[in-house]
Image (cartoon, rainbow, N blue to C red; front, side, top):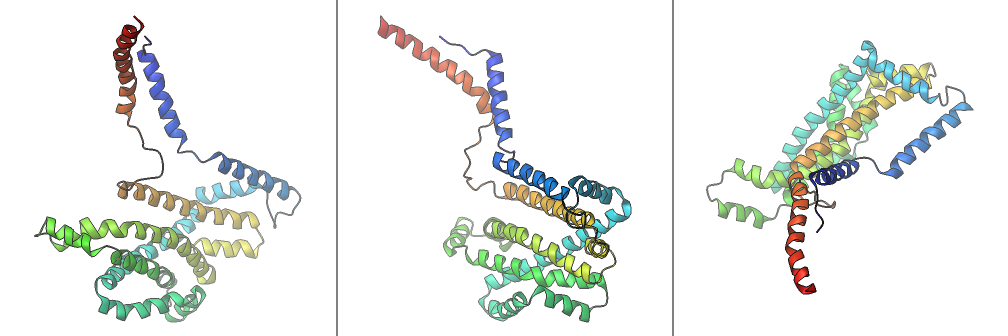
Length: 305
């Protein structure tokens, strides 16, 4: 009869932990594609002027410089603050408006035409409107970002609220007849609208970043957009790529935070991946295998006899 030693059990648990950690790494194809792109960059940059495509190491050093230097880091932080302030404002205003339209058809008939008009106005037109209406650069950028991303949150909240079946609401009320409105919102409405609102955050994050860059490029005296304008005037492509990469880093960080929130808030939903085995179950599996072998062994020996 085969036995599993404690050392063998530890190796098995360790092997499964390593396999579980490996699943969080990027796929092999993604890693190969990134490496191939970087190699191609180095090859092309070797035969082109710096104002067209600088060397990769120059861009990397420029990225490090803008995060190390306090004055340049402040430009990056100013842009990040503007993006987050506008998105948070649009999130609250749009979500409240969307839920109100979903709850009241009359209110939807009043607000929906305005939402559709706001969504149909191009971003560049909003830039011109903000420049004419407001004198403060900060107010211009905040208003521009609010108008561009407001409808995304409002439409997602409205659609997700209307998608909740009335039978589900009636069942929740019948189970707890004294359930208040706040309790109904927490247990029925909020789980229904969270997935769509997180999707709206992912979409509006990239849209808001591009809009803020346009606004800063047009008239700001501080921020990533302003620095891009300065780098463009002196044909410093390494600076353009470095400042662009700094915003890409910001977007990736916020997207990762949204993904973590999505896993936390939507952990009740089934995933397409294989079910995860807890560490306690992993440790019990070798013991159960030993027990099964000990139970089967006498039966086999009896048959042989």
